[in-house]
Image (cartoon, rainbow, N blue to C red; front, side, top):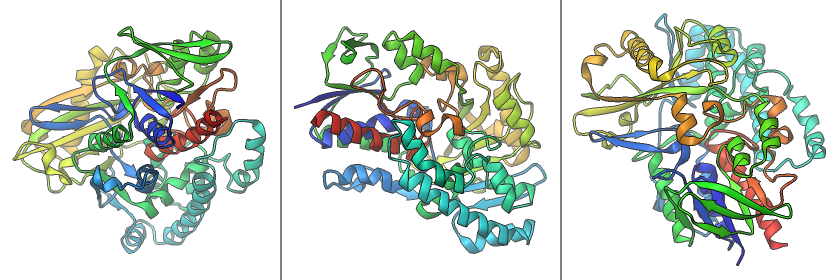
Length: 488
């Protein structure tokens, strides 16, 4: 029996390990932290369950496919429930917009902002459906290992004007500025700037429209636990709290994995779900590290987790709280220089869907603000964290959660320093490489290393990119390569 190691137990690592184990490859996952999940870690504090993220589950079929490999049903391990609306968007002037896949409601709300944009939205939806078919269904789970594969995809990418940004493409169909923001903000959920991310990422709208937005009862961590249970039933091994400290090679091939505890094992193949820069550090490959460090990395996040007394019936599960600026704020985040005084926020309210994530009579939340990564802003988060936390909570309190701070019973925050230290994320980036066209597909870290034999990548840093469908798609692409290579 062939043996494979997967470094990191995030969604991508777990999905890859499940595919390998289902194919009869004895697979061991190495996880540095005390719990599986990677960025989908969680904390239990004062009776609350706090998911680290990600919290938006789309395309549940890509997950169900993992269980179907062995004829199982995901429902035996995970209870997914729909979230409606998908997001409530709000602006400083009091305008709100409930974003979901109810066509009548969506078009009614569009017409209230600009009747002419209803027809424009329909054209945008057609465009989104086209790039969804080309960019997600056809290319999202196929590895780009040579430039010829990129050239083969080029005509379709050109047909959908992939060189344009998502915001530019949305603006070609829709003229109202709030609606432009409403239909372009999604790239931020995968680390991309709407002003520079390829228009191909407009496929996210069609992805959500067809597949809906879902939540795992018990939290995103419950989905992780379900994947682990399934993987272990298949015979896989998960080693927790034992970080890999070295990937050994011989004659240009990966051979061994060694951990902090002193454990060492020989494998036929190794795949990394860890940070791509840090992975090459485990190999001692300074040349590839330097090459990667010259690329553009996605921003980081500042996250405040808090619990309150009582419930908040007027606050939906997902809210996007736009600030007074859009383009200017994005410049602050992606070009750097300092912390924006007027951040836009994403508010996650899981107890709106699953009250069990808080003690009786309480609610659980997290609120995040995208912030520059550590290479773009010289911020001492030990000092600035508490100040920025208060600023973020003030915005929530003033905009739509009056009396919030008087009701908070527990609270902590997570900064770019934590992304760097807990996840070994280069520059504290929350999403790895920025998803611009020149860092996508063949231009991204390859699913199989072109120079080091038996070394593979999965997760946000490789093709197709971040987000649950993205990293699960990368697992499908990488698994196909590994299974074929190991069979040979």
